[in-house]
Image 1 (cartoon, rainbow, N blue to C red):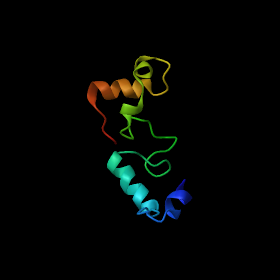
Image 2: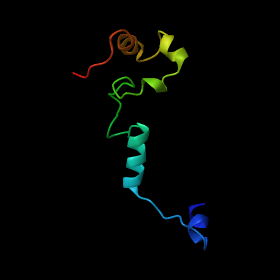
Image 3: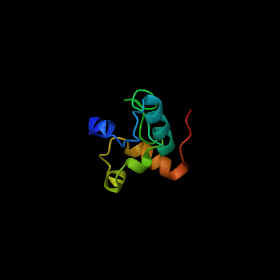
Length: 79
């Protein structure tokens, strides 16, 4: 698809690099794995509580359920 877009005579499309991706990612509030988040970061610590589905938020088996419940009660402060 990219080749087809770039090959068009009327194309005003140009390739964009990692800088463009990072700008868009930051504007959208998304995290980059390995940079902003990793295995040791909970969704709450990463500011991604919105990505946790409601059924998971209320299930006791959810891996990060205790931190999430604490976040709901008091908010999160990174130590």
